[in-house]
Image (tube, rainbow, N blue to C red):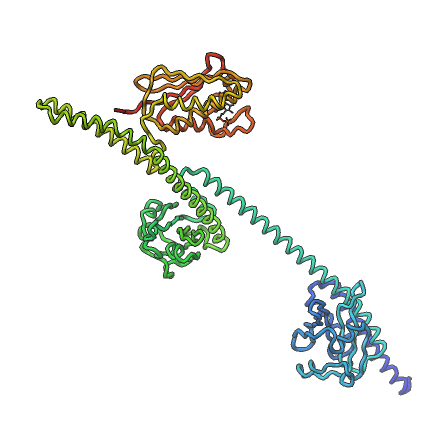
Length: 591
Ligand code: ADP
């Protein structure tokens, strides 16, 4: 039987064993969580709890160094509250450990000058014994401090120091690993985001490209808006859409284009400025997403009555340029729910394209108008001259009528006068239609021999260095109504092609003849002629062949001028084996 002393020893040994067992278990759990957890917050929390068990203390804290802010911080003050403690990197006991890298073992913190009792005052805790060790990175830099407070038995031993240092090196590795994993995950996230952004950009570019294609395929502003709108309705997967523009006098908003069930009805709608969602958007320059129209003040139910289908939701974005309020792009009834932010961004993109296309087209119209007026200005003396002939005839007949007794003769003369007025009216109509841009021709009575004389002069000078002889032949002087400027452009384009086809020199003949119906121009050269392969495509825009720096526009322009005059153009083989371009233009009514 063991005596009482031995019994006491056995009891001590047993409780020692139980304690050691608990510490070993805590160590094992710590090792396990250090290996398994990569979330830094969870890791710190678990590590601190285990350290308290291992150290048989009351609480523990793990500080991390924030070198950028020159602070140490902890989120895991053990106990009820999980507050973040921040303090200067060199303050307090932990600060001293960071600065020196040494282990600190105090039996009573309050007796040590380095201790800062502020935290105790804040938390109402009473610190007594303290054991603090440094956490180091693989490179040896101090990354934090592991601190255990109030050893249950009173003070921390040398063994505790060694144990906490061992634990600290394990914790350091785990923290570094967690930070590394975090870093990789953030980078991965960044990479995924970058990939998404790139995909979005590519998609955006694709949309822009498609829109650009629509714009360039359109023949006028009206068609261009319609094409863009149709794209918008497709891309945004909605039922209908419209483009509302502010009228020139800013007095109303009209629907320049509409796509969807009630296309015609929408286009008839006129709204006072600022009225309806589209009006509000056009006036405020801000976008609107309305998912419950009936509950929105801006919604104008009269429109719904007119278009005849229920409006579930609306997305409208402004169309504006440099402060000028142009209108709004409005989309109705998203097919699978409501319009979102992505839809709004896409609509902005489309509206932006529409605005720049409108501006280009308006600018072009303006320039065109100015060009027309300046052409009329240049031609004015000629135009007045054209009027002189019928006026002279009128004045002659009127004088005759004044002295004519016979009624039948007077009637004949008055009919002749009226016919001259018809010519005058016809010429005025043509002039006005050119000025308004309805026709591209400024028709005047021209003498072809005069035009040809000028052109021959120009061509001779251009052709001479290439040793190409120019011959112009015209049987009799011909006058007819045509656009002189355009006719000159036509002659120049055909002649220059002939010159380019004869780099070694040759002959170029222009022959003009007429009959009652029209005037025929034949341009023949002694070049290589036109092969069958390219004959059918000659007059296409951008068709060019065997030429350096050819634009393929010369003959396309010729064809347009001929078409505008209501004439014909074709190519034959010239008598001397080269090309012969024939242009036939109809004669119009003339005095
Ligand atoms: P470009 O001169 O810029 O190529 P054009 O529309 O004026 O464009 O002419 C189209 C093509 O027609 C030319 O590239 C050339 O191959 C052919 N062509 C035009 N005129 C002649 C000609 N008189 N002789 C031979 N080939 C010609």
